[in-house]
Length: 222
Ligand code: G3P
Image 1 (tube, rainbow, N blue to C red):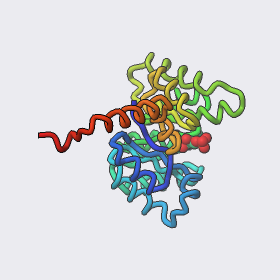
Image 2 (cartoon, helix red, strand yellow):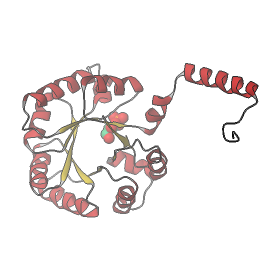
Image 3 (cartoon, rainbow, N blue to C red):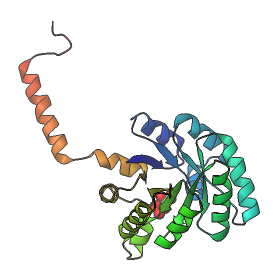
């Protein structure tokens, strides 16, 4: 399973990239606004230098012609840019045009299996079902992931990867992995939560204390 981080905060991205576990980055207009970055293009350029895997950069327009131009501009930033487009008729037309030209496209704001089928037919590299936002309205977000993974498996010609988005807690990630989703984009806070277990902390404290009792040092050993 690939791990992307869902943030536009460059310091967070650098820190998480140093773990060696990061396969990509997703941003969206809200995350860019939160980051306070003055130049979106410069920010994406910097992120692409830090992380070699796919870096999603979202178009701002909603009409076909402008979205296509924006997507082409974003794709020029670096080879690892995945242009993010909304799941609308115009967005999917842009997806087809950019994908046919060899650009990675992440289709975002997916809330149904029928939308995911359209994105795969439009040649998307990634489909982003937003599971947390479905859970927020009392709809099972993970069932959508299950449906999409199953449907895509039925059609080996579909090359679209399921990128689980709007992840809110570690169990979302574990359930998505159980289902076999290709990618999870995870907020930095949740990535850090993945490491935590009280028994790990307790066990380590005991090992450290017991080791001290031996009076030895591994590095000073002959
Ligand atoms: O990047 C898209 C998605 O992950 C947003 O998540 O928490 O705003 O629903 P959220």
